[in-house]
Length: 187
Image (tube, rainbow, N blue to C red; front, side):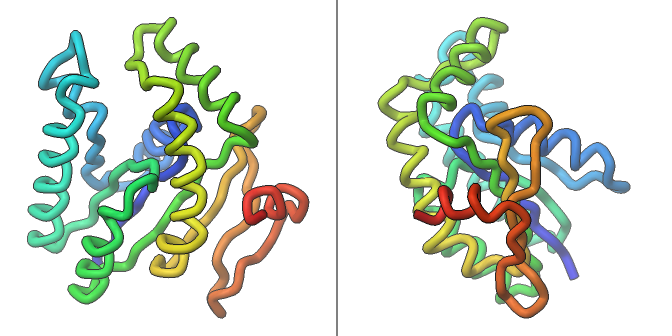
């Protein structure tokens, strides 16, 4: 059975870093599709100017990989519902969907992390977009994406080291490792 790894979380949560760490440990490592990387290739001086084009190219690449029935991975904030239909179609095709959600305790921390990324040469995301995506992504994780996933795991990356908060068990119920954090996420 082919598998899809979905690395998700708000901007600045550390999902790219976690993705690279996890994917580098897999042999063979599945292709990782990331709209930010595509945008940087299209226009390194202004990735925001090509963000919509990069997102379309990303979805085209994901559809191509799914048609090849190969394992692959991608990154998303889950702020849009765009990937839900795609993932359901992949499941009908026989894919197993594995969702990795990286949580931060508040949108202010996400804004600060993006500022640090920009200071070290990374791409910027406007604060209002970070804040909007923070809430939408969390809501969509809980209401849309986690229910459709075959497996999911939630990490808290608010402090170092990153910690597992909860994961989906075989009987489709969450196993909660950190009840107080899980309560914050689900409130």
